[in-house]
Length: 90
Image (spheres, one colour):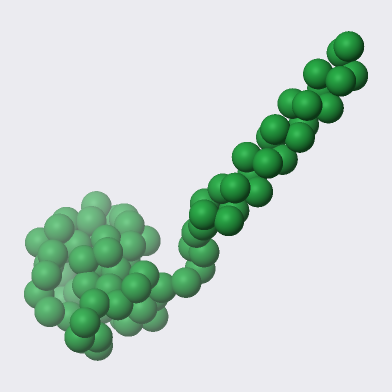
């Protein structure tokens, strides 16, 4: 009886995982965020104060992440923009 129950639980978990993967339950964290209608290549001034505050606190990686969320920049563009802002703040 115990072996059959264990088998049924295993099958149930397997079906659940398969359904989640089919629905896109996993997200590729290495890909850049989706772009808006007009791709942005330079800073637009969006979130300057928030990003600057993160830089002043020494939280550079979080500043890059926040800038990417706000502007949909690529990782390299956001890194360059944060470094430029960091230089201006010094």
